[in-house]
Image 1 (spheres, rainbow, N blue to C red):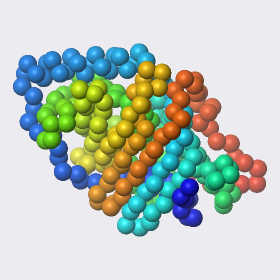
Image 2 (image 1 turned 180 degrees about the vertical axis):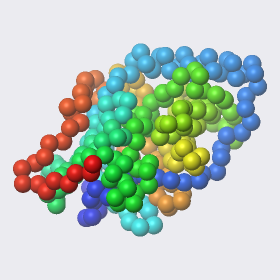
Image 3 (image 1 turned 180 degrees about the horizontal axis):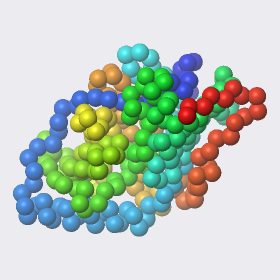
Image 4 (image 1 turned 135 degrees about the vertical axis):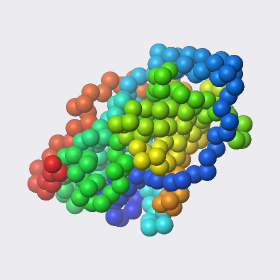
Length: 270
């Protein structure tokens, strides 16, 4: 196991904040007839996945990161409750928790077992106090980590060819008050797999690039097992490997609530 000695709340939050300006990979829009038939195929694929995929995922996670400032990694477990809640717990070689974080994009909780500190409150207050970019935590991490595609027919505004003929880029436009109003998804219809997602923040800047390197099927539902996150402006890359994936557990919000351990220092972010 690789783990940076300074794995604190700042480090784990920073892992979730990747910004970059990757070269645009989508080309010309599809012609009318091809656009119509492709749109029908993708909406049917979404229906199939909704029928077999559940709200929850539980998996062992290994993450390694490399940036201009530091490199390191963690091992532990990840739990997701769609659409917006996740829990990430880093453990040591003996299986003891070192750090835990939960969030739904609006509220967060962290426990640092090494320093004996419990933090909780609003995500917006935390990122403001520590001068962290606003898109550190949001309500889309569940979708990203599970490889879920979530949009309505109205939000699918355009279909474009890929520069390398790997698939079709789906152009999504969400409400302006969401974390990421615009998103591009590269879907390979030959394999029925999501290959890549590129999202933009409300300011129109590219925020993150997520590449899905490998997939598996668990109880009929496609799940990613290898995820590569890249942010060129921060000079950061993160490789995430998921193993022993389970999607037949029924989590509730109680599973994503961390209790204040006895004797821990409590820090509240109103």
